Length: 194
Image (tube, helix red, strand yellow):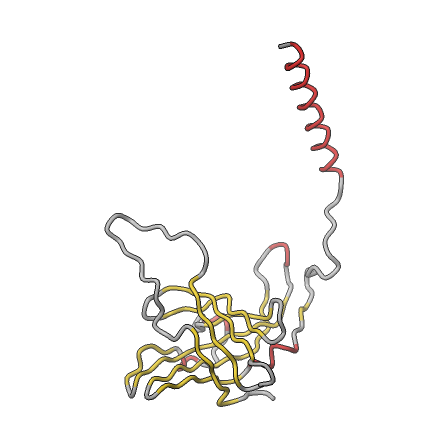
């Protein structure tokens, strides 16, 4: 029993000593870590600017994408600005528009009319859409728009639900579907700012 108590006290003392030492070591940030007031320029985003369309019969899905400078709201990145993509979409069957935000195309980020927001994270040929807003179901998703190999005007659009936990009250249901297509090849029909 005495040995167990001594071991426990020694372990606690060692833990406290390591904790105190860790607090004295300054945090070393990577060299490419955003600096306050810095600017993250990304020329590769230009590959995705323009209007993209998928069509099957009389069913049409369109996204319009523009490059913007996005100012970080995170305290750690105070004043940091980076290039990003903002966009709007429309989904229609025949003459009937199922949902559309295209009438707001060209609005500024602050106006909050966009339904697409993203940037390049790892692959220069794959736009990562961190936020896609489905207007009909009022839910968010995450998507990618990846240029097809050897193509500059054809890309695969893949939309998925965001990962996370969904809380439902008794009797509530959750719709796992999206109104717009979730896996299609789109073609650029208009290229802005070449």
